[in-house]
Amino acid sequence: MSTTAPDATAPDETALVEQFEQVLARHDRIEPRDWMPEKYRATLVRQIAQHAHSEIIGMQPEGNWITRAPSLRRKAILLAKVQDEAGHGLYLYSACETLGVSRQELTEKLVSGQQKYSSIFNYPTLSYADVGTIGWLVDGAAIANQVPLCRTSYGPYGRSMIRICKEESFHQRQGYELLMTMMRGSDAQRAMVQESVDRFWWPALMMFGPPDDDSPNTAQSMAWGIKRDTNDELRQKFVDMSVPQAERLGVTLPDPDLVWNAERGHHDFGQPDWEEFRAVVTGAGPCNAQRIAHRRRAHEDGAWVRDAATAFAARSSAEPVETREARA
Ligand code: FAQ
Image (cartoon, rainbow, N blue to C red):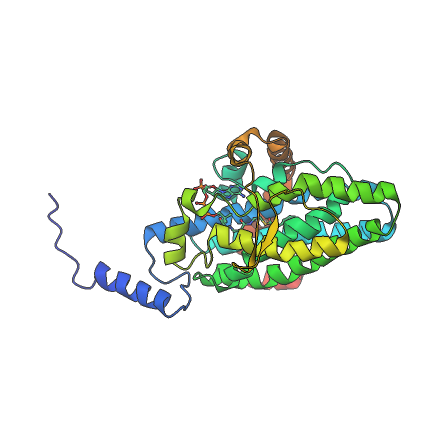
């Protein structure tokens, strides 16, 4: 039994919870120094880390084509796009650090398989059309999911989403423009686009997560304002948005059940293969091992840069200000 007397100056937990809930009810933001329930913090770390890892691992499928881009213009566009994804990862790691975890810790959890990243990046990129399809469908799904996250309840996460969404929307347009150009080309190019869309359509639908009935986190994340829409609501929005774009492009979406439902004012559509989704999320997708091995190798190869930066920072902080200024 503890003999310590209760601290009369410590804020009462019930009052803190009440204050936290009032902020959420006003649709205001929770900021890093505000009190928050431990589970809210843990849920944010889980989602933001997973999101950051997705941006970083997401550089690999398209990075695969940088050396084989068909023209200097396409190479410059692709390089810039992949670099943007690195930037998104860094904003998100910084947002996550405000919750008391370090980037080092997060990277270790990624390479050891303790934290996830989006299932979509475990599929291979087999033709240059895949660069366009990723821009159109994968960035398109990312936007559908992330625009509502600009209004998420945690300040640093919501603010990082604003710039990310602007860049993702540019990425989506560049992907669509690439596919449009290929569709105006030869029969072989049109066939390449269709084949690519056939492979990416269902994995893109899986990006929104399991159906609501099977989503353990949605209800609580919605109650806390971390998520603003459910997985199924966002999937529906994405399908409705993609159908007219596919028609304009001249490709078929590979779903025999896809049909406009006038009564609902939405498209009805088939279900992705949820067994395949579970396999990919638990490590058995076509490229899981390759993606993690590559990330681990890049992390190890970068050790000397981290060591040098740490040594430089330690030396700089130990020096008198005058010496530092003289050197600058
Ligand atoms: N892949 O209970 P829920 C991009 C996991 S965009 C892998 O429904 P939640 C841009 C989930 O974590 C892609 N795992 O979970 C780009 C949970 O497992 P856990 C990244 C998934 O969190 C474009 C379990 O299943 N975007 O990178 C997936 O409420 C082009 C149960 O699921 C984001 O991360 C999945 N698809 O909802 C970059 C957006 N779905 O953690 C390069 C932010 C679910 O309990 C090129 N995240 N799981 O062990 C979110 O909005 C949410 O976290 C969801 C999942 C909607 C992804």
